[in-house]
Length: 496
Ligand code: ADP
Ligand code: ADP
Ligand code: MG
Image (cartoon, rainbow, N blue to C red):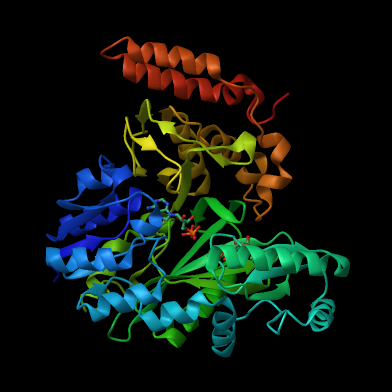
């Protein structure tokens, strides 16, 4: 087994990986930028090495420096977390060449799946249903128009190198095609340095349903069931759950088979996710494969009783998978809410500042994966996700009620957060009914908008916090309680 592992990441995922390593008796080596000198992930690691600079390019994305640090520190392996270098085939190769194990799938697989055009072609070959589309040369506008007409409007323009919801444009009619193509190309070139665009059928009101896959170096492959991630803003997930309320046993079996076929076709090693869209008519289509640990992996861990990070480490070290298809069974229900420093009332724009208060809920079946603590500075440099709140329940309604409870007890002062907004979502009748789709937040935006500003309550809480011992807990309760006002006054979710 490895003796020391470098975690090439920051925030909650670096903390999460440290824990798994330490449990296994492996030394966790953190890296940190100038802005992260006092970050939680540094405190929680066994050792830490600075990455001079602040911008991601000079720090957490600096491949040469990370490898030099790893070699100097004598580590055996590198865990990339998610985001940053986790889906970078060049980095995976560079690790290999430096004699380090990259904790992730083979570079060839990362590369093949990083190109959405190639990925679709490869999985279609393996018999996985893909969205009808066209991957011809988009510089030939006449050919593109013909292809779009054949697919049928609305169509979606997507970046071949896309990720994080960037480079996508919905086109509802032929007149808008040229303009949308120019915009998508510009965005893709800027974000990925690769302007290649393809077109596919735009599925209306789809649900995002993904399957966790896992493989080892001994040819074992499993699918670890689904997560539904239909609650999204800007094509990015904010609430995820498992099992999906939309899946019948027959549909789960069919989608699970497709996911496993994908894993087998790729000879997949390590953790990955096969993303699908489920159309209202019950047809499902492959979207992409994420060749890494997913932000939302905890919902799978809670429902299956597994530790996916531990499994990643074991598999990377050459051990066989610690579970097999027959032994994994879904039990109960889990929901995750991503807690962001952002303002739902202003286009979910990130919010920055020092966390004057950060107190997280505690209780049976409540898990909080955190990347910050009180006093932490939330800056413009990195992703504004502060924590993930994950709950388990015997069934969906139990988990949902527990989530509503836990959100009301999550108190953050110093930055604007989406906590109240999340509470309004999980209390919304359509969410309660499990009636989800990827435009849920837009469709229900009126119901979900904030009833009033809570400055007064926040000021009271801040005053209490300043009042000394015991005041802090009362302040947290007051701040959290204030957030519940609109629901507890019998109005529950509507601002009227
Ligand atoms: P998924 O949500 O399906 O896992 P995404 O591509 O949306 O896939 O997840 C990666 C997201 O996490 C990106 O938005 C990226 O900016 C962000 N991210 C990367 N590293 C971190 C980190 N250490 N902490 C929080 N967020 C991060
Ligand atoms: P990314 O790499 O940015 O995550 P994905 O291909 O996974 O890109 O798509 C992200 C989200 O965009 C999906 O979860 C879904 O909400 C939406 N989306 C993607 N393709 C389509 C489509 N053909 N029709 C409708 N929505 C789509
Ligand atoms: Mg995706």
